[in-house]
Length: 333
Image 1 (cartoon, rainbow, N blue to C red):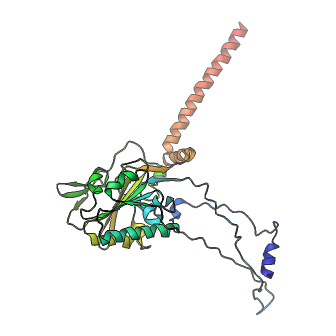
Image 2: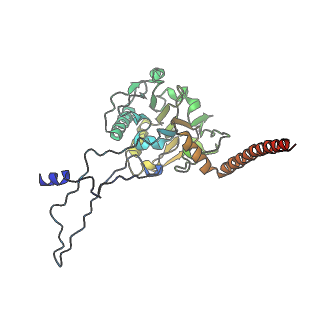
Image 3: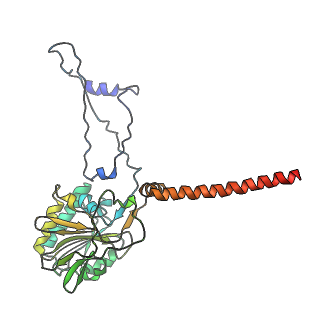
């Protein structure tokens, strides 16, 4: 009770109470961060062997304290399996997975069911809430999931969506040989909001071949063929037992940072990743942030804008001065 009274007596004039604004760069936030509070009290020095801490020092966090993230824009450049691996995004955008669909084979085997349960447990562990409202179905039900982000699980030839969505996959099969799809070429420059400066992912030029030896295990991400700005994450293994490789990495905090891009190939001891699919965006970024990042990434564009603005200002001033001189000449006549 005495300690509680001491806390209640802390007034607004106490210099230890203040507001702090902390800026955290995006690359420093991994989705599984912890906030720790440390208290340090100075000792009252009374002499030799008397520098003992008093027994009435109290440190506490106001139970009404809040962390305000409202200023953060709800925006992400996709596809990016790093989001999925770390915090289950975009599926965990709603804690109960109310906008998530899971597509299993018509007759799932024990390995496929194991991956499904592991992924659901991983989503619940990320949000701290049970995944009660996700939709579960097969390839025949996928059209009903158009308004959802979709997880697809399959092995060997059990998943029909592999052929139905073949033109969307980062992998293509040509003459029995699987290759990484040729990266999408665009005239648009890469801006910082695509996060290329934070998470660099090698982009292949179409010369990486994957021989179909019956042991390929992959994790793929791409934009949903059913609705723009919706995401699909596909877990596939040629051999059902190799699906365990995916869950082993997703539950290993030391290896999970290796998952990124839109295509991850799992080997026995390591994994490779790349990014070949076209970038799409989830959410919205403030216009001024885009403009500021554009000029920061491309200072020549900023210089060009300044030159054009100067020319326009010069033309406007010259027209105004001509009118003034013309009026003065007319008055003199």
